[in-house]
Image (cartoon, rainbow, N blue to C red; front, side, top):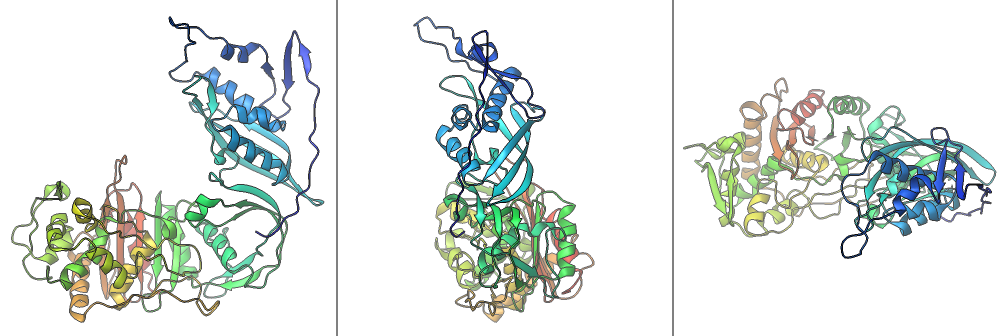
Length: 559
């Protein structure tokens, strides 16, 4: 972020009116007009207590009343608005963290003239609108946004308090993040697609986090000049998740440098349209022959699940597992392969969807129908690190070394044992992926070689792309392509892949998630020199949810 000069601001003080021994503070913000009483009235209720038989005060329990929610909300918002940080922090669940962030709101973010307007509570959750002015070194701009808070009962005192998280102050903040206004240490960038057209969030709503990442990586290298901005500066935990700093408001524009990406304007527009039609969906499209990322889109604009998500990939992981089993002679496409209704390993009893079984079937039939036990049954023949090595050495996954041009999660296939190792063979257990990873898996099968996906050409900055240490044998590759082609034509992917012609292959998946009624639906596929993968969280089976999204983009060809 670079160094910033901070300007101390004078805090306005008001002399309260004394009414009958009580202090009444008039709140000027719309929707907050009225009296917040200290020393009596509504707050006095909280100070009264009854005692138990042992003489100790009773601690109030049970659901919060509407009055308790309203009182805690007004006390917090009134104190924050008037700059009384200590009083505001005192009615939160984390006094120290609240005081620090609310102090920085004025001192570091240079926000003044704050007006907070509460909305209609939904139980204990209260939305509120924020209006303020960002003022720094003679430059000022208005800022407005919506946020919310949740009131909870303190388990020790029984009193209502605001459940503290940094997102209360601004919804883009994670705990540990801060708001800072000043001369940005990173110049802005003008990102362009492969045809030279400018990439903006107005044109492509999904690409906000991508643009943030491009700026962080290439802002200085692209030759731009920094401006003055209000930014979310990421803390330690956010940086662990590879989140980039985020600009909320520009007080003065910097001069951007230009960064060219590999995005296809036609495919990106189509991807945006697809995810807009289905909640919690994400998709990525690649060119297998080069690794170029042609499109990335997320229904949720707040987090780039497509690049940074960490989700169990379900049965799409069977593409990687199949390559392992074929290499080790434990499976062959057209040879008989067991698919029992149940298989027990490591103390866990595994079963197939709807408890089906295939009698006398081939491995190809088990792959196409996504038979779990066909894979689990081979666990006793494998070492604990067999799948991990296959993912790393052949598919370039789980080594945390991709250099895409923006932050990414590069998949995780940890070494596991017993039941967890068996579960990892079907994309559960500790295995974690995202659409970028699974699109890369299909791209590796289509081309026969792992090519690390990238959004910005390595020629721009001379960075080194990740490589896999070996490739599959021609026999293994041929069988794997046969499995995916059969699944696209006759298996669980057939309905979604109708009308997708040529050299095609696909695999569906669904991943169970604790506490979620429906599984995450996955789909990965290729058509010629195009590979794509998508996920719909809590959507159901991949063929019905993510499948149509991926297939629609493959039908477009490599535009």
